[in-house]
Each structure stands twice: as structure tokens, then as C-alpha cells.
Length: 287
Image 1 (cartoon, helix red, strand yellow):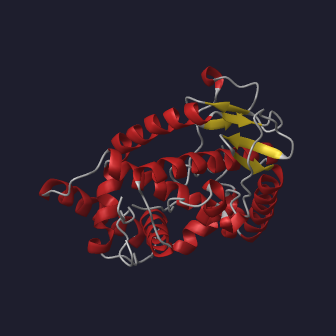
Image 2: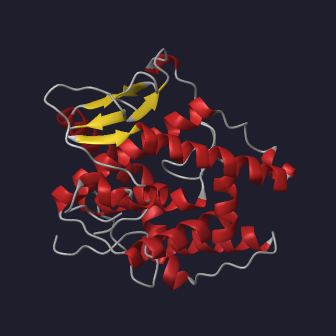
């Protein structure tokens, strides 16, 4: 995906990362969260949560890492709301406990995605991630700036946003291996129709899309098959989570294996409220 966003990253020997990608031949989460200083520690034989928000196999997500991400998110959300009160009214207020669960869900999912990507031989570059970031932002929100503004309102600081985006890109890369899409005349036409709708939508808002159809085609073809592709990825991630044994510090909630998410400790799957509008896979604004 070098310069042209295709919605997936290149498969090298092995494909891509994006929301947040790159396989991690090094340490599982060190490489994943270089931007937010996620530290991976070796867990003892006995699972403990001293200083940790979550453990995935031998990987540990530090409480301090989660706290820093949440503190930055709350600060940027307040600043964004003060700068644009009208836009702030379109989303629910950001609560620390909710943001903690949302952020921790993403960090745990990212660790699982990296494990699966490594097993499939998927690799990606910073250029791949940049291209995915651009396609995701422009085609979904009209521009990178518009996406980053909405993310800030939702409690994601700009310096952490690439980590969240990388998760989405990895998801798409893994789906390319498990449920690949074939570009045919029919899928190309569907992608073209979707592109024209996007151009018309943002054109009505006086925004000009910065990607040509040729640049956007691969991303759109994948996006149109998202439901089937995601099902394949989530099935595989549930298997990985069960094998690696995900453990959440009770202070932050409990792990819901079915949803692949951190939920309030007293909340069951049956009583979990419907998800709030989101920025895309894994980027719920008010969850």
C-alpha cells in the first residue's frame, strides 16, 4: 500500500497493518505501542495484576500505560469540546471508566491481532499504515483533519490515534488472508458507486475528496465485504484469546470472550447495552 491506499497492507512473504499494523517479529506489544510506550513484561507462572491492567499470555499491559492514554484522551476531549461546543453535543460525555474500558479493549485486541498476524506472516511498513490512515480518514470522514477532530471529541489523543488505527489495519490485513476479496467487474462497479456516493456526500459539505477512485478502489472493495471478512477474523481472535488466556485487572472490568471486549465487571453479555455510534471498527466514541 505504499503510496496508494488499498485498505490493506502488503503481504511480505508471508500483509499489512493499519489501524493500528505490522506484524511483530519482535516483542508482541513493544512494537505495537511504541507510540504510547506499552511495556511488555514476562508474566510469572501465576497470573497477577500487580502494576498491570491486563495480561495476555506472557504479555502485560501496564496500568501506567493505560492511565496515560486515558488522561491524554480526557484532556483532548475537553479541549476539543471547548473549541467546538456544537460538535461536542453530538456525542455523549466522556467518562473515565468508559474510556478506560474502551482503550484497554483496543490494547488487548491489538495484542491478539499482532499474534495472529505474526502467525500468518503478515508484515507492514510505516508507509502502509500512513496510506491506510489516509484512506480510512478521507473516505470515512472527508479528510484527515475531520477524522482527528472527531477522534479528539471521542477521547483519543492524536499521539495515540495511530495505535487505534493500526488495530483496524491489522484486522483488514488478517481478513485478506482468511477471507480474501476478489476484484471483479461487479465488485469494481460496487466500489465505484460507493466512491461516487462519498464524493457527493462530502461535496455537499463543501469538502473535496483527496483520493482518486483508483487510489480508493482497493480499500472500498474490502470495506464493502467487511461483515463477512470481520466474522472470519473475530472467530480466529476468539480462538487466540482462549489459547493465550486474557486476564483483566478487576479494577478495570472483566473480559467478555464473546465480544472480545473489556466490559464493566457487573455487566453480562445479556445486559450489555447496544454499542454507541463509532468512528469505525474498534473506535467507538462513547462505549
